[in-house]
Length: 190
Length: 109
Image 1: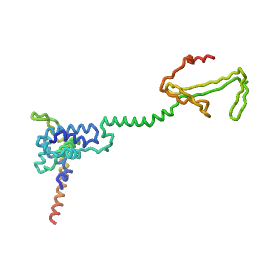
Image 2: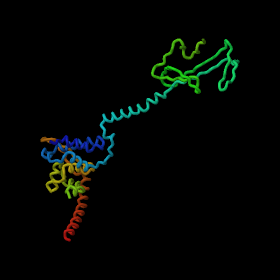
Image 3: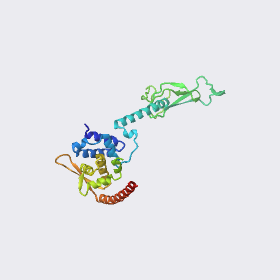
């Protein structure tokens, strides 16, 4: 047996391209109208879908383009948003991780000005006396927002002496207490 | 041709006429139309027409509680509805007369 709920449900489906407030308004109005009909009159109405279609043709409602987003329920919309976010994450995050390198290294070399040197092809060769001083320095700079742990260095070839190969920001940097010194103070001479 | 197709252009006029000068509710309008031979007009069309006329300002409505059953919505013409009704009746009479003339001439040949 067809009930008033069937007619109201059919009308909501018929008006699914309309904003929610119009659907609610019309559904409420139709329920109110059908409630006042005698039960024998309800039995003589058209089928719910036909009734809803005929009723809609009487309303001055502009047909709105149906799109998947408007038709979707809120749980479905949330699942679509989650899917899009997951898809973007899968596409963007792995390359970003693979290319993320916040640590740069600068190695410098120095010695007394009177250390004799000569060019050998592309290289500068320094000749140190016994007891002479060689100064080697290395700046390691983390320009990223996170603490980094350098796990290895490799020969960078023409780009420089070393290149950090496994610097990741996942763990807080550990400082070996043997080499730590207070910030802002010069490193102790060794 | 179906009666409903012929009625498309004049349904609002018929409904406004059925509402009359006083107040009427949806089912009463439907019965009034059926009583004069417009039984093919469905409840959905009549109810839709009432809502449309109300939205256009030609009808106003009020909900009245009923001791026997659910509340009933009564419709009445507004001043704008009365003006539109009188003007459209004149248009309809000219139109109807013209169609009658054409039909009579068509039958006579």
